[in-house]
Amino acid sequence: MNAAYLQLIILIVLIVVFQVVVGRVGLEKEAQRRWQHALTGQALVGCSYFLDVWMCTVGLILGLFGIAFMKYMYPVDYLRLFGPLLRPHEREQLPGAFYFLLGTLLVLFLVPLETARYAVLCLSYADPAAAWIGRTIPLRKFHDSASVGGCLACFVIACVIGAGFLSYNQDENHVARILIGALVCTIAEALPVGNDNLMIPLLTALSVEWLF
Image (cartoon, rainbow, N blue to C red; front, top):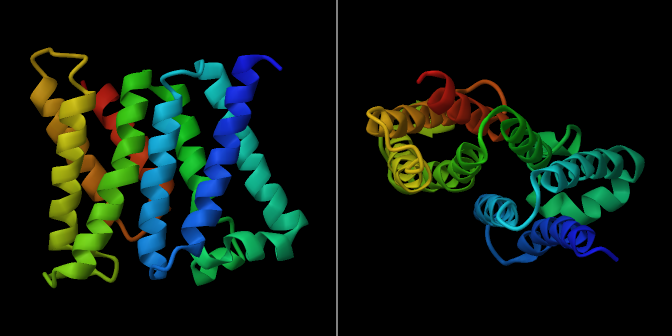
C-alpha cells in the first residue's frame, strides 16, 4: 500500500479512536468533550504537516460521510460507540464532531494552510478553555453558555495561539491580526446561536485573512 494512503487511514482511525477512548475515560461528560476537542484538533493539525492538502481534504470528507453514515444507517452502534460524549440533542441530530470536521474542511479550502491551522487550534483549545473557566470561576454570565471569565480565557488562549501561528506574516498588521482573530474567536464562542464547532474556525480564519 502507498505510504500516503496508509497515513490517511491512520489519521481516520486515530480520530475515531479518540472519540471512543475519551468517552470511556472516568471524567464527567463536559470534561470528556473538552479533551476530545483538544486531541482531535491537535491530531488534525499535526497530520497537516506530513500529509498533502488533498489527502487531508479526502480524510475530512470521509470523516464527515462516516459520521453521517453511522448516525443514520447504524444508529444503535453509533450510540453504543459515541453515546458517552453526546449531549441530549445530539442523539437526534448530527454531533458536534461532524461540525468540527466540517469547519476544518471549510477553512482548509478558504484560507492559507497556516491560517487554517491557527483557526482549528483556536477551536481545539480556546473553546474548551472558555468552557472550563466559565464553569470553574463564577463570574457574570452573558447567557447560560457564556460568561466574562470564559470569554477572557478564550481571548487569551486565542492570542497565544495567534502569536505562534500567525507569525509567518510579520507585516505592520501583525499584532492587529492576532487581536482581531482572538476577538472574533471569542465572539463566535460566546454567541448563543449557531454551532461553535463550525462558527469559531470559519469566522476566526476569515477575519484574519479578509479584514486585512
